[in-house]
Length: 423
Image (tube, rainbow, N blue to C red; front, side, top):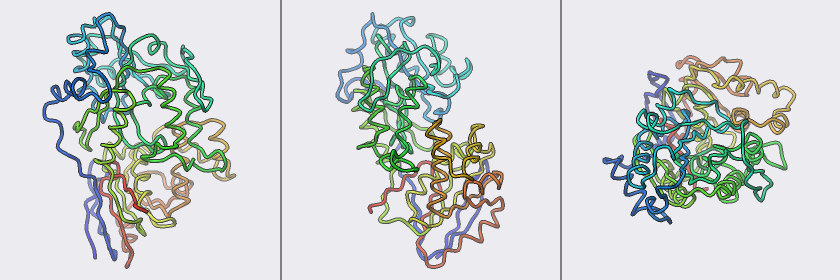
């Protein structure tokens, strides 16, 4: 059988025909978006609050309040629509003066946001009324305790002695299981040392490979997640608001309430909305990142590669379509290639863990487990160094898409599709 697809590629599309014995096309199916966001927000923080009293009973007029929000790298969650609703609720319903409220950007180890970005990520409305500040992982922190795994939890002073509200987006995460929730605390507002101690658990303590206990949609026994949750508990947020969006940035649900339990509910919804059960892994997978901005660089679009990897048999073929007009992304990304010739990547990452380094590490691990072909604008040498097969011409790639009588899975929108194999 054969099927032709128009795969999104940067700002355009690439038509390609897949031929195989069996072709399964998998995409997530999401519900209709929220029609009345203001009313949905009110219900979420009041009568629908998960394992928590209504927010208006938790926050009082005399309280000092810190709201943790995400930086511009999470702009796809469109928190700027929720931030003003929360501010109005805190000020008008709870009676908190503007001067008692701070919106703190949980940047983790990312760069600081500019004044213009404050208005973008929190809305001009919020930026005009309350302080918006950046966390600095190398700046002043307060030690609030140690987790059972020995992570020394050092946090921004603005989350100590104040009522802390977490506002974040829940998505699948390649080693923490899911994003959002407790991640607003760790890594969001922790010291660089705390972040590095936590993220080191993403590496297998007994072998030079990613930790098998960590992965997409995995929280049970996941040491990264469990350590993050312990750190957040030491801070003791009073409330959590969790955003779930579809691929077009429209809000689908706002599970809110207890900072952990409401987030766990949001994870269940993300599985229901983005997870697609497959009976078994395929001989080959063709996965597209979904066009710009999802395929802006390899650092960002590798989420689709990781998702596609969940659907392919060990040693199978993985065809990845991602323009990557801005290359690898962070300046350091392809720099990690220097450790590949002498097989020291694992030891180098353990000595100086960075998220960009870990993403590079994951990509190499995938390329060592499957035959990876990439259609992109990336430098061929950079991909070859990562043990991947580079392609710049769609016609050249087309020659590889005749799979004979094999079973092939096609994922046209890989960023929002998470295969879940029964096996």
